[in-house]
Amino acid sequence: MNTGARLPDVNHYLDRAAATPLIPVRLDPDGPTIWCKLEFLNPSGSTKDRIACHILHKAVRTGTVPPGGTVVEASSGSTSIAMALASAQLGLKFVAVMPEGVSRERRLMIEAYGGEVQFSPRGEGILGALAAAAAVADERGAFQPLQFENPDNPAAHRSRTTQEVLAQIPGGRVDAVVSGVGTGGTLVGLFEGLCDHGCSPTAFAARPVGGAAIGGAGAECCSFSGRIPGVIDGLSAIYTKFRADRAASLVELDVSDDESMEVARRLIRKGFPIGPSSGLNYRAAMTVAQRLGPEARILTVFPDRMERYFSTELFGATSQG
Image (cartoon, rainbow, N blue to C red):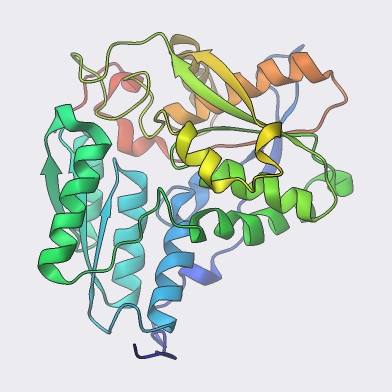
């Protein structure tokens, strides 16, 4: 393996992007205050820029990916968009393998960055996409980031995201971290990073429940509830990412996806250009605030932007392939 490969000298900004804001958000005048990291302000519009930058830059530096090489990832959307942007920055080819049924906007964004999109059968969900991505990687000799199992996923948040939070939140204290679970990288990385710096937060994993069956009419392709894109039943993945001595502290929360959607729409009307998973996270954080009391510092993230959901239920439409 060749090591010490140089990153491009020009047109290269992803790892220099400014910290996203962390702000107190109160949805109702008498409601709780939740500290929200505005991850939709990352360059590609989602928190997944952090793992794409961290994983692909490391792969280039170590020679794991040769100049002009190919990257293949299975993702329902935001990770593929972020990987497409990062690959464009690094002069790499990118192939996204996505289950049929994702919104048209996400496919167009990937292709706009020069990425290629392949679809796996909708009924097979993300597991089918993972198998198809592995086959493409074998055929093309491509690098797979493997976001669901790669320890560099939570490591991206354990380092830089955590440092941003601690510099931004008054007093550097966080009592709870709340997030929906896709790969688990955001929740695990923030939780462990905060523990590294002397905080003692409780980690809450939010699961949307009560919606249409996966694959049902109008449903997104690989959501746990069928209605909150990018949030899957990934608790097995999150437990593998936790250090064994910390996994016992994880608390699981079931959240109505009707409430998640409504909260997302209310946040949008207040000027936050967010997607459904932000509604899930905020609604779960409200529940945590009721449990922990008004003095608790509760941290969550708004993972992505609303533009990739214009053709989905969030805006009164059905998703399109």
